[in-house]
Each structure stands twice: as C-alpha cells, then as structure tokens.
Length: 84
Image (cartoon, rainbow, N blue to C red; front, top):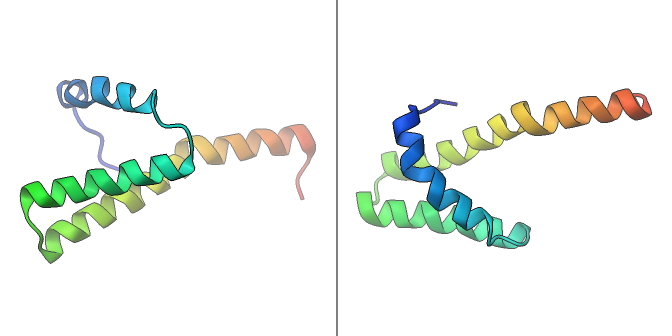
C-alpha cells in the first residue's frame, strides 16, 4: 500500500475522523466506500484506468487492513486460546 506524506494525510484526516464518528454498521461503511469511489469517478471521469484505480485501491486497502489489523488480532487470539 502506498503511504502518503503527512501533509497529504492532513488534508483527509479531519474529514475521515468526522465520517468515522457517524458510521454505525457494516452497511454504512460499505456505502461510504462505494460512494467515495463513485464521487471520485464523477470528478475524474469514467475510464478503464480510473475504474481500475478505484478497484485496486479498495483491494489494496483490504490487504493492508488484514496485514496491519486483522492478522495481528488473530495472532493474539491464537496465543490466548491456542491454535486450531
């Protein structure tokens, strides 16, 4: 996953924190991810490259989520409860 510079993070973090405070369930989170991608495509134009960019970003964000959050959580649960 490409990491962005701190100054670019600052552009997004406040809006993301505000949005995160409103999301209440999986469906709403799914909607927000979908809608953000649609809004980006409306702004930059629909092309295979742009559509692929959104799809790729979602997939890579999923992989990063697993690598940084879910995987370590599962490892901790294995330590607590034993492996299968």
